Amino acid sequence: MRNKWSLLFLLIPFISMLWVSSYNSIEPSWVGIPFFYWYQLLWVIIGAIIIWLVYLLTESRS
Amino acid sequence: MNLIAIGIFVFFFALITIVGFWAVYWRKAPLNTLHEWGLAGRRSGTFISWFLIGGDVYTAYTFIAVPGLLFGAGALGFFAVPYTIIVYPILFLIFPRLWFECKRNGFVTSSDFVRACYGSPQLALMMALTGIVATMPYIALQLIGIQVVIAGLGIHTQGLGGDIPLIIAFLILAAFTYTSGLRAPTLIAVIKDTMI
Image (cartoon, rainbow over all chains, first blue to last red; front, side, top):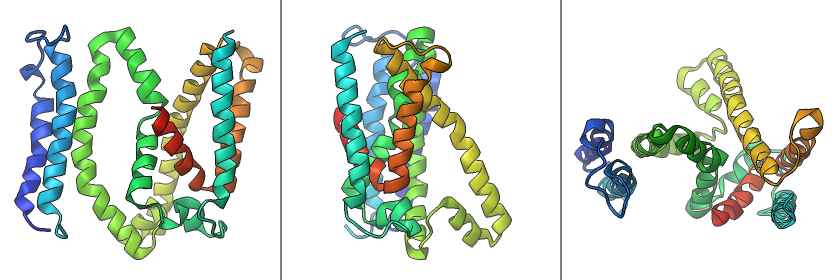
């Protein structure tokens, strides 16, 4: 496995999601959806992108 | 009773039953070997595996239980979202490695893996029993999910007689899983994921 250190990127979703007080608010709301909800749903996409990037960085056959 | 809803339900249930039993003929191989029955012959590939895992991960729990909890208890039910976001990096680290080792050594279950890892048949047995016991509440959850759907069709689901639709559904599912092995859930997962 090359670029072993890139596995540390996988910690980002943990930090962002477990740090609840950073997103526990109504504003800024988006099309009526409170920040608390759309921020977490946005992180579904960001989390997937992070895993995809780590996959590209660690995959040795690419 | 809603006849259109019942019609759609019966149609898809019939479709899934036919596909489930037909799955025996898909990539036909002797199903009396454990890896053909339990792992569809290890030939699913990335695309089919993606459907199968998707069908296994996103279930009645995702579409009935979690939205129900959100409706009833509010933001508390949203735990499922950060949970999923956190669990995928963990699976990304563990599963490819587990898959590689199991493929190389011909393991079928996690018990095989544990027995080879620690050389202890007792531990493997405990692992298998734990797996069965831990699956029970999950199966119960799925059954409650089916029951909610049946009740949603306007069919009476109270008491012993009310369990009959559920028992029939479960027996059919169990029967084609018994005859077709993992091939049945794999093909059904494709239908299910498409419906989702």
